[in-house]
Length: 286
Image (tube, rainbow, N blue to C red; front, side):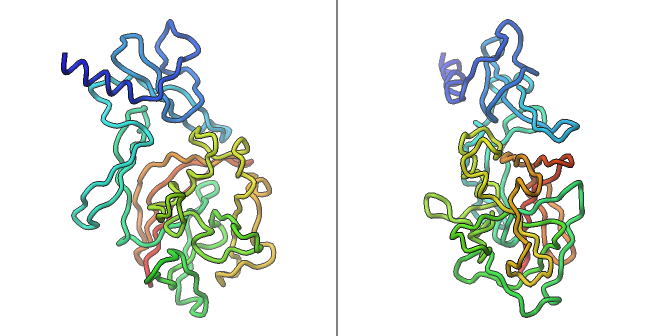
């Protein structure tokens, strides 16, 4: 009885919804909210609402494979603190893998640099401009004591995701990007750009798009001259750039260059030309 009671508690923690057809397994049926779950026919397993990008660049939500309650190690959206040998205490988030299995994904840490989001259109490579190439240009990404203001800088081909919080017409620091310089609602700094972006997911469906009230505030900053100042024509809204939606759910695929800059957390976005990749870029201090 004790084991059954514990397993039932795990299912009780899930955000359960009813699929359109209740006489068949939910797997493959359409759903609306990332991380919600539907009971499978055996009553002891659940399928989680996940998403993918179709050939046209559109985000498609459907239920994944049925997962036995004994295999559900976490509830999507949960976070916890874990010990890391190098970084000390870091945060881990409960995410869904490609088949819809909940799993803990550990975040990066401060040793891997300050982190804002950039957009890769159509698999364009992330090309960095060395800090030494623009020695007079500085930008405070972390917005905290001891911040490094000398980092490499992405080219205009992979623009920053930004928000002009003070409506000044310029991006003035990391607090107006999406990453470790972002102030969260509880007063803490975001561990990564996707946690910062989640604040714009007003309807909590796992995607930031036109259905969210603040979608119109989001901007792309293409710093064409790499002077780390917002110049004429460098800011455009997502709508102007043809970007339709940004996925809040992310996976981790760490890839670093010779200068210590690491592309780590990643998700998808859709735009008029197809699909792209939203990347949390950890910048090393130079």
